[in-house]
Length: 462
Image 1 (cartoon, rainbow, N blue to C red):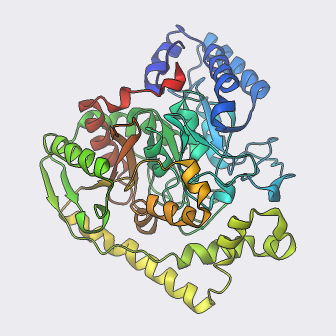
Image 2 (cartoon, one colour; image 1 turned 90 degrees about the vertical axis):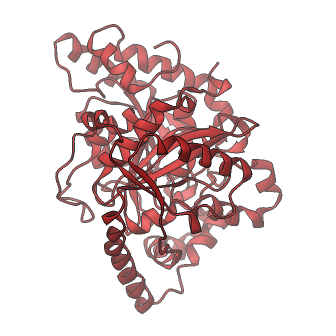
Image 3 (tube, rainbow, N blue to C red; image 1 turned 180 degrees about the vertical axis):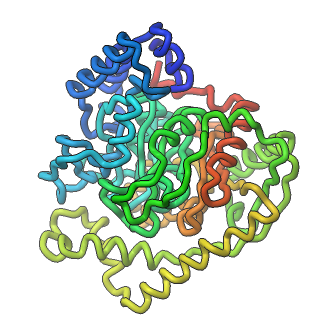
């Protein structure tokens, strides 16, 4: 495998027999052994099962069986996602003895595509936070600066991909938990349309807002993984029975002709100076790639009642029976939903449905929307720990620009668009109409290929 590389680079070499699944898997496992003590990105590597899967994939290649671009590729799972026979802990003492008998649907599809499941990633406990500083297994550290957070709740997944410990990771995104850590760790994080990827076999946070999506090193990799995991699942009531596009081939169509809207009023407010500068530079680049860039005004939903109510509803029995199994901060967050009445919940759910329907009108005039992914780069771990009262406000700030797209249910991606003077990654968010991940990926890929940000790697890789 040599130096850090992407799935889109590895897949042709695997197909030609220049490199083997076993070789790639062993290298990832060696990197986990070498670097995970400094990053805490993995709760546990699945070394023996992964090597066994790699050998099976290698034997298939020798027989002329080729499952596609994920054949033999090591992929990690956020530890909310079930893999048969492997504990799913949600980084909480609550699930110390949880041992699933079946793969989550997304894992089943990855295995069908030939992927090698290499391990479980650390996360913010029960996915209820954007820092990954609250976990039964300790803090996740950012590969670009170990004194900084990796984001959350899929912090371990983003840190693992950024440091080359896995070729991809599957995370979950309820308010930005794929895109925000993706941005803070210099990765690509994709949240598909609500209902595009099955949630069956994934511990929920808020069923109306939860999404599953990939964290990867490049936009082409996001298309490859999405094509494998997307599609209808009759066993998941949130899953939509709609056809899946050829996302990989669509990348070649480019961004010419696309109309881009820039919603400045909300998403560009109170940006960190370096984030603001990077965004203006990125927008200048995008103007050369597309047909039109214009400002647009959006009515942005900010109420969090629905998430609070659904999180409490899922955890209510355990909160009543074993509150001591939760971290006190997580317990406090969950209990904020205890006072939400049935009437209020129904009204907030109606508002969600209305917001998802009306946002479509924006795309009569625009094909895509572009914003900063986060208003600021990764904060210091020490600063957040020195002032615990600042933790939740900091997380809410980091998730400010990503959360509305969960409410709207729109597909959205974060791609690297610059670095601060101190070397911290900055992310650009691109969102599109429902079910048009292909448009999102087209602009993301065109922008990525026109810049060099995605080519940078953290020094920790060596």
